Image (cartoon, rainbow, N blue to C red; front, top):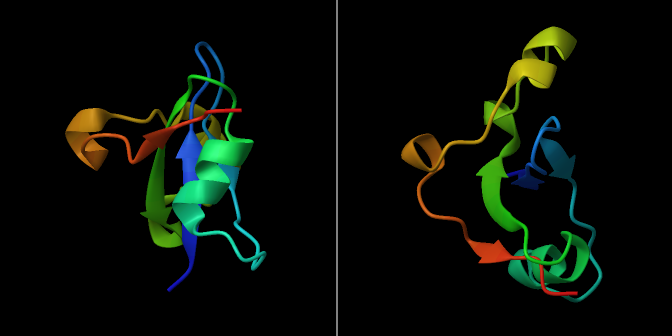
Amino acid sequence: MAMRIVYQPPGEPVASMTPCDCGLTIEEIGRKDVPLGMPFWIVHESIIPLDPVARLEWELSADELGDPVGVGAE
């Protein structure tokens, strides 16, 4: 199952990160690599729009995704 870390800086498109196999959990990678104080979610790659225009218009919603999994800490 291909999981991605997603977050959305204010006024910007959603950012998606593909975690590497580096010995850290996906949550640890999110806390380490997502900008400081930015909430993030871990989602299956299938929910990320493939169409470039739809991708730019996509916005993260706690109603759709639930509470964030974590917050960028570094």
